[in-house]
Length: 388
Image (cartoon, helix red, strand yellow):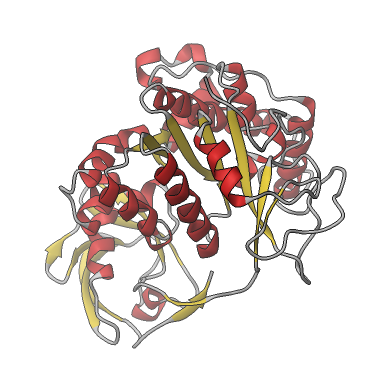
């Protein structure tokens, strides 16, 4: 029987997907100090007792802002602490759809190197955020043989379910995922606000319903993946965007409908200082104070293009302003056929070549533009420093 030492079994109340720290609700008196665990209502938590309590849960949800390196360092810190107390655990990833599960299994088994894993999982097409943000966690899983579970679904399947409805998609084609429970009024309100921001009020109402339906597919798929993983290990730790977790909507709401209520939601939170907004009392069950700053990092080589698979090569859908690709004369609509003499047939092929490119060198690319092949040279700077 599982026991609770530190956190109450109270589900949080309000949620929003895109708005993270600046939200509604009763506010506590202060933000957490750097490195401090805090209940949103203001009570400081002892980290040792907290980890012991969490290790006895069925599911622990760790929120993140996807492009924040410190959020992923915090996640690794928590995962390592929980693994020391409960080795029979799995790590569930929002980042990859279920089709990527064989690649995750092969990675944990030590059968793939980083480049091969990114290709086999189709990481950049499925997720898009830099794999460097997640590789420390993935390496921890491989070193300790901790199972990794893909709990998302592809954009294509998400679109089918949202547009055509659940009854129109055979159960086998949706991995046995059942239809979601309806969004609560508070969740619908927050999703409507987010949708209105993107539409600038130009919507007849049908667009909002499609948007909400798509978010519910996303939430339900992840909740179903967590439930399945929880039947295979004593503890499942989910790494999920914090907008899907806050206030008990999103994934937590769907988990309860699936019969999983032994879970806790943890979030990183800006530590006390100029950027801190005191947390609403019911945003999560525990917060960890992180100093907000732009950390300079040496970015891996990037062309600066949005890619898509194209029968004979890799299609360029968008070119970032000021990028290596723009300087090389690459245009949207081009199809990249070869890189450094090697044929590329999917985005991971090109990404692997670019990742291996030394700073300050040239990468020859063969592209097809308006039916004709030509060669362009992509010149990479000596190094590039950016901030997350």
